[in-house]
Amino acid sequence: LQDIIQAYKSGITLQGNSTSLGRWDFSGSFFFSISTITTIGYGNLSPSTAAGRIFCIFFALFGIPLNLVLLNSIGQLMLSGVQHCAHHLEEKFHWQKKATLLMRICALLTCLLLFLLLPPVLFSAKEGWSYEEGFYYSFITLATIGFGDYVIGMNPDRTYPGWYKNVVSLWILFGMAWLALVIKFCINLLE
Amino acid sequence: MALTSQPLQGKKRCKKIFWAVFPHACFILSLVIYAFLGALMFSHIEGNRKVNSSEAYRNFLQGLWSISKNLSDNMTENEEVFKEKIYNLLGTFEQEWFVDPKKIWNFFGSLFFCCTVFTTVGYGNTYPITRAGKYLCMLYALFGIPLMFLVLTDMGDILATVLSKCYNEYRKVQSKILDSKLCSVFMCKKESETKSRRSLLMKSKAVINEPLSIVEVLKSQSAFKRKPIQYRNAEIFEMLIAREKENTKLSRTKSIERWSSCPELERGKTMTSVIENFDKIGKELEKLDVPILLMILVIFVYISCAAAILPKWETNLDFQEAFYFCFITLTTIGFGDTQLQHPRFFLFLSLYIIIGMEIVFIAFKLGQDRLIAFYKKVISFCGDKKIAPKKIYPK
Image (cartoon, rainbow over all chains, first blue to last red):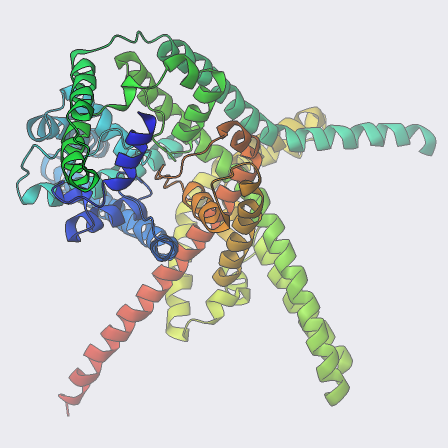
């Protein structure tokens, strides 16, 4: 029985009829590239040819620093946006120091809601997971651990709307930038 | 008097060494304890999972049985039909039916799992199935990942110092050879030697010790030299502003320095230097300036070493596959497509893995800096192009 299962696992790439994220067409490969350069690495799809692996190594070597630069810039953008709003609030209501603290707490809560508490609702609607499983998936993805036990878009019985993958990719990007920012803040607070 | 002060000096030195090594050892020890604790917890929670044969499992087995029963004797006909049916059936397969939790989640298995969590590699060959296990996993990752990050940054300082010292030694030797060649031709021996020695000393100072002035440091860094002149001023300006912002933080450490100069607090000096060292974590890493190709070469050599010895006990991996596996692990991507037969032996290489992740981390940091410099160049190039045609109009 184990042999059959092993054969199935290696043979899945040969059969068609699976979901678009489980095959090496454009969207599947795009999702694979994202999971590589963000170092999440789900493993639902991975190169098996020698040439593919060598390319993957070089791709990761250039892609990971690029991704880090992108995350840093997005983080800076978000931070400057928050500071801008805090500045406006200060001018309008003359609150001085309280405004920045309030703004920061507000931003933290909204981002927490947007990146960690709302996506599981989307996942439970589209993937049929429970809220807990969706939350577990979001956390494991944003922490870049990426076990691969839960992966979006891998269920062949479900149809996914066109915007689904793109929205999830955007979520991964901004969520990771936000998380990196939060960790930086925590480290600064500890010092 | 000289005789009595000698054993005192020896004691002092031992104390110094101890307090120098202590913080680093502290971090690593706390990480190890964290890993062991996690292994105990997970092996308890997941190992004691009740395996109940679910409805889906029984249906799966029945389906398999009926398929094999209905196969005819004709081999070529069988293949297509068999493939189709088996494919549909195996779509309902769940890994948890066929694994014995006690075997997989024994102490070493859980330890391996914990390592994949806090290093964020996350292979996925073992993952928590129970609800409590999942929540514990998230909590464990929340505290474990920053701890791992702290250990990495701390050890990264040491590695960065070692790397820059080696690199500087190499450059010294290189320029000495060049000098000796030049001097034999131009006969300006003393001048060039002292010049090169001074510039090299400045370089080594800049890379290892606290910089005395930003402009000096920047001018000696080779990466900086490659940039055009307009850029240098802008960068110096930016760095000066950044330093001004830092000065407000520095005032706190300055107060510690003041009391360490008081002779009565000599005893407290070691503690303050330890506390100061905690603040300096990560500073060495930021100052590293080694060419990135060298780093990539170091990475490839490092991975090749492991890839050469790994197939000795993992018999189904050849060199190329072991190389790919090590690379994917050290960059913390961790697909999990390569299954290890003996994960325990891989744990023994944990020191190798930490140092490898260090090196990769440093290389990525350097890559980031180079990328940013490259983008700035491109943007300024485009910007210059835009300004040039405008200049024609005022005529």
